[in-house]
Length: 615
Ligand code: ADP
Ligand code: MG
Image 1 (cartoon, protein in one colour):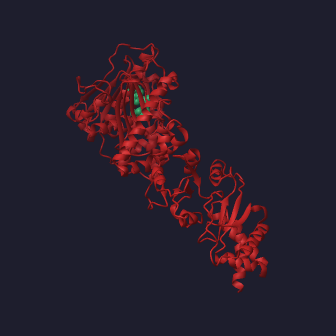
Image 2 (cartoon, rainbow, N blue to C red):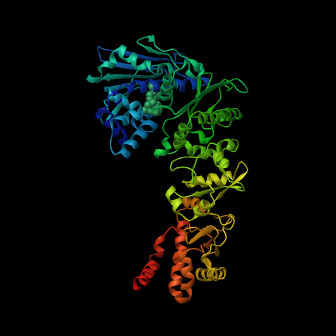
Image 3 (cartoon, rainbow, N blue to C red):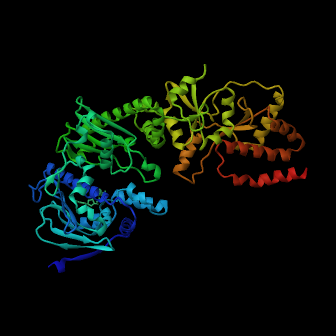
């Protein structure tokens, strides 16, 4: 019978890769496999408890929800048994033969990106079930899923190319994993050693863990305990356990409230923001419990999207126990819980900021992008979130950050607006023509380095009643500086402007004498209310090949030598003068970020060079 039902399977190629790395690396922390198997058993029990709550008809209904670990130092084995949901044949193939789950996927990607496996890569990522092959010669997984029509099955592998699945008889509900230990992993058949490994996190597991029949953990969820009795180490261990993480959290928030809602929450800001490493959008990481029972490990509708980086647990006694995940997502109650959490989290940031501004800036470097997301999407909290924004500015050092509040406190008498400039880097902003006029008048300008920042500014519109204004806007009235002593005479300047407009034609909106410029000969200013440079950049980002129009005014610096010479040249040598004007305009466009393909001007530059070389 066993003969007949035995099926051989190949591991998916990615699994082979993971196994190859896991088995052959020199990584010494083999013990992580215990944590992985216990956490899987715990997940399976949580799932079963949820099925019970929602009234499903369950096989072997009355088995205890606990995790049994047995060691055998004669046979050199360790066994993990749970009476959780178990697995069907398809699930065995899917879960233990392919990579669908997060840990191993992220792991492979990191290996690929770093161009090889370093020892601590395995340590940084949970490779889940497959980590068992660090310690195992072979593994047998006996299982029966929770459904009454389920079957008893055995999955077997030595971690080589494949695995076998066969039908067996008489399994109880759940999963039993028999690990036949490698010679150099014998230590895990010693109960003393196993107990030591379990000690670090077993108290976070919400089910009894029995080692050779003796319960080794107290079950008191950490989030229900009072702050005073929990050490930093314990908090950090819980974070690692709950978030499947290997770093330490930057911030944590532990609170309980009774009214208007009964909530116990323990939240963490991770040490790293994986979205910065290109791992795609993070799944929600705050689990929802009701009276210590897991309702949903990754609830979608609980917290606003911009808080998706948070990890931890929210437990609310007000949730109906039999709430289904689907109705939970859009229930008014869940939304209210989410609002309470969001408010508390923002408050925590405000407090932390006061306590240690440097640490907040470290946090901001990793997670500031989420504050920005909040500013543009969370209208309830936008006022508070705007105060948490940080930017470099013309008043800070390179790398130093300022808040909008501090900017406002430095505003000059008569200054009504908050100015900003976008460019990918500080040097580019400081070398460009737009800053000059502001610098000359000692007006502070915020430096924006990411396209999303402009979107944040436009969406915010105002801060403390002051308009947020891009410094490349043609409309800004900075007050004329007044003509300088050896500037071009007014009539000549007017004449020159007319001639430039005529030469450039429709490519320019207006040409005039600038009151802003100090060192640059000319500047291009945005003259289109709707299609601002930032709007163009955003639209370009969405549609790369879009041919987007712009409308600019050209302002010239009547005190600049080039402009004064040009005024003479246009009478003496109009052809050369036209070439110079064309180039002057293109330069202004480049400095303002309009001209994306400078190849178009190469030909003109050659012609100018030709004339220069003639002299
Ligand atoms: P993850 O836990 O991140 O999903 P693992 O590699 O640890 O990844 O486990 C893969 C999958 O195998 C789990 O998602 C689960 O579906 C299944 N699994 C593992 N162990 C058990 C178990 N003891 N009971 C039921 N299912 C299990
Ligand atoms: Mg797991």
